[in-house]
Length: 411
Image (spheres, rainbow, N blue to C red):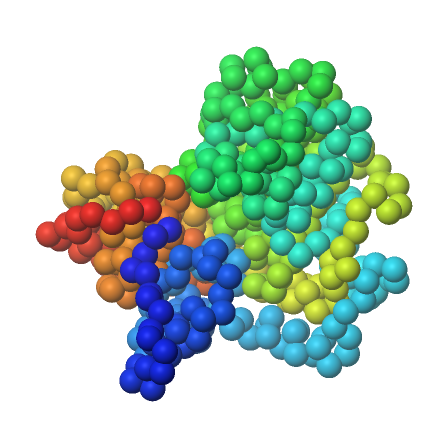
């Protein structure tokens, strides 16, 4: 998302800048340049709040892009990390490990899928799923959906729809098709005995916060079964309570063959996982691997995060607060709003104009939110957010969208 870009300061003038500006300049001097940065330095978080270097407080509806479900600086996760760091940080899967064994058992019980490959990110989880699907079926074709986002590594990028992400790196991995989302007829026409997998988001996140229709999601699974293709569900953003259940596929009674998760799996510590259904069996040795996958530090953080999610009923809380938040946003009387939609605490407000200037204005009101495409304002607050904090966020949205307006800007 384009923002108020920070320009490099002339040489020798850092001493004339504020502390926040100095930090920004130090990053600008060394960053690879692939990120558009908002002109704010975040130095601390607690629960659903963030603070910048100047001490200004924000309600966080970005939530680490969905990785902060149990809240910033969660004390249970912090304690687990500290304790594990003093015992053993790394242990590759050349060996067995107590924390890894406990986490695998816990995760497989939660998903209902008996085997799991542990990695480090969502893109890695998708890459593993693509490889596993091709290996297990002996086929190469993968069907994904328009507006879908699955990551930026070459295989995950090949499954991602948006041209601005794909274009500079073509030719990508061959064998990928993209069809319209929520269009079962399009899938019927595309799927065949050459299809290894259908890669599906139950709610499209980056693509605009579009929930799948009940009949569409059930139909995708049925068509996969009928054609011998594997149903791969991408729950990288929707997993771990975000939509009102532990996983979004559980709303619809879906049974994924392969399941990809990441983001909030370990309370903000980098981790990803790819699950395999029972009928797929065990994979052959050496077909995939990861040096840091399943490291004890991330496993300890994940176990603590899962304990916290369940003990505090965060999925149920997300269902209740998400419904309330969507209703409150729907009450805003603004000609700019086209639609409010979402599932649980994954909420999108589609505007009739480009969203970037309104996100900038919202940040000035003390609320952080994300874009989802050119026109959608996306809210992914930590699931520990209070109703009072959501009410403040909604009031800020109302002020921004009912005010004199913000013209221009690009997404």
